[in-house]
Length: 114
Length: 107
Image (tube, rainbow over all chains, first blue to last red; front, side):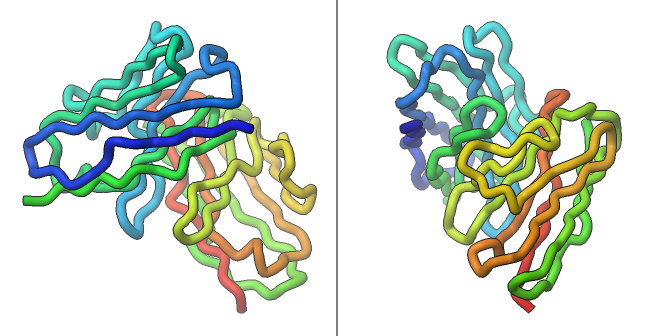
């Protein structure tokens, strides 16, 4: 059974940093690109970042480019999202997503507030 | 960026109805189009990929069609569990983009 379990969310002050983790299991992790998608309270879905199976290519939404960094560890079956210079508008539920969206985690909530 | 526009934004229907949701892309996305269902408090669930391929385990009452810039999601014989918000997504070009969502409500 495919499982994606996010962690690392929480309350953080504007301008501070947070690192999200996603533990993957139940599939051959290094066969798939991985993505982070977020959803602000009461809003729609916004793709944040994606990474190819071999970390050869990483892409970011303009709204996070230069502040967020995606990475993965194929030996441990983890994908990460390092978030710096957090802003109020980054507050959202962050989902870890496998491939083209076949499987999603349950999300980890990031709250940015002073 | 490729803009994805869904219509309608909300839709009221009755149990047993057949409904169609449209998604238009601002540029050609070929068949790199997916549909997701999201219920309140839950993660999105994949329904359709490659515009018309049914995700494993998804009932055949859901069907997708289209290519290029215009796509549709059709749900036949609505049941209470189908009332949710539906999103389209293009994954042809980065940044990946979603439609704004269509909220399907019980009439």
